Image (cartoon, rainbow, N blue to C red; front, side, top):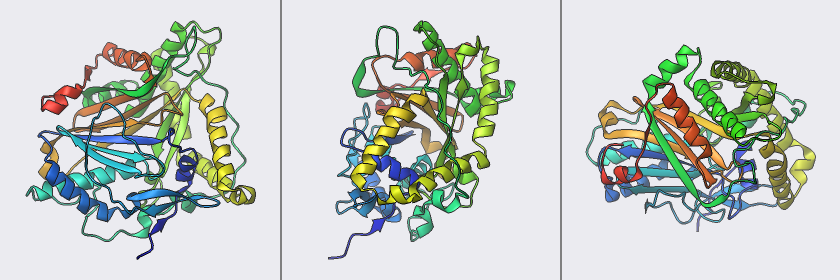
Length: 430
């Protein structure tokens, strides 16, 4: 019997694996909404061919004495019929990747220990192209997809954090406690047993045009809208003391370095305002967010963060601690320290493109986070052609944030249509 192949976990993946339990499962979802019903038999065949190209995603999480590691799964990923109202069960003992379908939707859910959004989108693009090739469409493996006939190379699963960190830096100063949207006057919001998902669809061109009026990028403009939504919520709660509002904005570090990795390689910048300083006009919030993003999401600032993180991993004491102690320490740091510094997070995957042969066969993409033990509400954005999809996933009982977010956009003259899950299943327009 051949020995199962092993893969090392990247620096960010080590943290995600350390806090993963049967109840806490850092993960995310990408959905492709097609213009026609999915053909399950064809998609199943496409999935088999695609997964042979991504062996480092067809793995399970294993415990070593000092670190976790990934091992080739004995039971391969198979296509599932989904109920998309909730996230799928990705347990530490089972598959770390789920691929399913429902109606016109193809759903890819991935544990964060495997990769970030870039890796998941690469997998989904490859799967879509292979699906249509098996339906007889002449479409090339381009626009970021990988050719399923090629052999995977080691660079695709390398730890680029470790490769590109430059020097050891002093630990960053912890930031003060931030407002959390699940907090409100009279006690915290009731936590829901299931994940609620709300998706708003709008014109990407209209949002870009509005952002340019503030001399900001789309990410900066929408982050400012999210910050204003959180400020409004805190004000309405009539809190005795107004706390800073701080949003963690993700960044794809691949734009800075010549890497081919499909493992995690994302950074982040924590941006926002302190309402205690006074009343902020929306233009002032955009300006603050704009300058903070340009500073914090630069190559040098991001390299400082990844250098600090990789230095901690190389620390002799950390390396020699048994895994069960590392897991307790990581959970303590995230729950007691890091989570209090941030209000929520925002991920903008930017614009997705596909080969011309299948461009009209996909209506839109959606993305949403499922790391809802750390953040009780998360925001994911992705655009395709002129459709910008903004999804909120939450584990609290009321749409406190997303309602205000979409209302602000409507007030700015941007038409927002809430996506109907049932229409997507029946094949109607979104």
